Length: 318
Image (cartoon, rainbow, N blue to C red; front, top):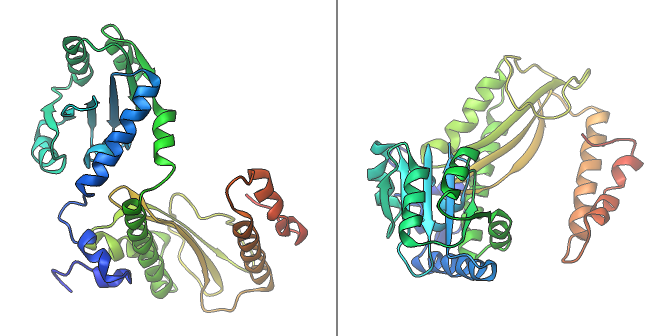
């Protein structure tokens, strides 16, 4: 329905509506404080007085985790516990929306010399040791390091992200629901004669219009009688769907920075051949055996051993 948020399409409990229908997805103030306190504790353990969070060409997610701003071309943010964060962004026309989304942050224009401005600010503050999170390029690193020592802080940041808060889990469920919506649309809408490009477009149309963001949708289509595609293709082809095909997809849709992922396969105007029945049954059994084995303290080799049904049934993994 035009103008609808599309929440009903997600098949989520009503409690998720308030999260989903925000103009800009944003966590509670308490959640952001939890993150800042956790970052401060990691910094204290490492003897850091500042952290520099970097997003470049949409790569690097510490900024969105700490401020709500996903970053575009370049985003450089200084965090010092107990002080207002300072963020330099490119480009100048990105400032208005950034200031609206990154609440409580001093947002400044990077002037296409953001690393130099960061270095000057750190020198002015008398910074002693700065941790770096994200893709800071070599030239920028060297430039800032003329003013203050830098150390990589990525591993410590990853440790912070390993355990999700209850609010984060809610957002992940929305990402999962958007991904499920894309897959339901693919299953319901796949028709003989459609190209992989058209299948991709159909998936995107299901969730982009209600606020979902494209993650991936790798698609494979192949005749079951003579299969020539063993994993969903990362780049789509103009091959058209034919009767007797197997179509399969690895699909991720994202809710701001929280994603779901779903992998499914379907047959077109035909029952699965015996090979595809056996493949599906083996994959399902392997999945069940692995998930039964997962618990705290289990080593990855035990999960590999739990998947032994694959080789036992005469298959392998790619």
